[in-house]
Length: 276
Image (cartoon, rainbow, N blue to C red; front, side, top):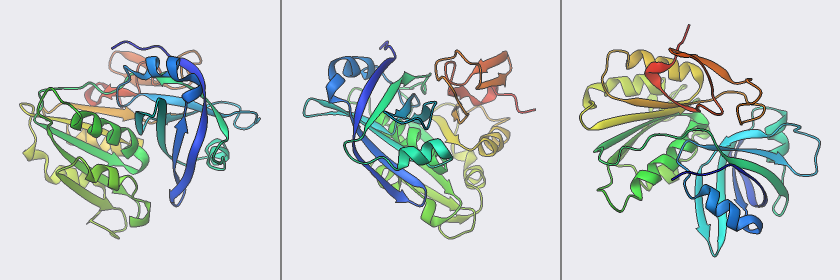
């Protein structure tokens, strides 16, 4: 369903740290419910919003954040965002309290393609990359027309205490496979290594792979899937200034030329990305 980008004001319900440097924010956009609800009605997982604290000089530019979940509640629209403090801008946002207002621009970008008749959905998440994949998994799980697919999730983090979002994944996944770089939980190593061990279980006839995480992780995943027919879409993490394709600050190279992550992405076919 088509949608349009709108600028709205949200009020923070809570903004709590759930792991070191990782926050879960819940926003109520009830004051703009009619326009927001209409705009977000057609949103697909993988799309994002741009945020800026109202009435503050910092951050000057909005910060992009993937939508973690989105739902109506008692006539209001609730947007949840799972994010990591990565710099001054997100640090300022992490200090915001309940009832503080925040400027929101969205929904933005191109989300994941949905394959309604797919039997198996494989999610490969690195760190905070679990946010859009959790939204995607619940989107598939809520399909009331088609039989929901089996959902398998690979989750990687540097350490056990930095694993986030597992509670939401538990609600929808038949299997969650965890890796940590230091071996403090699950497989000792990279999440892509764990996924590679199972690659023969997935094929193009019934499976689709989705991923989001740091650029080196996506590059490694692309190498693993180089000669595989199973489709794979990835959400690319990139710095953005405008979020609407005007500044060209987030351009990346693909086989057909350059594309803007904010407008043409952030979701791309992994086989279309150029790594050199």
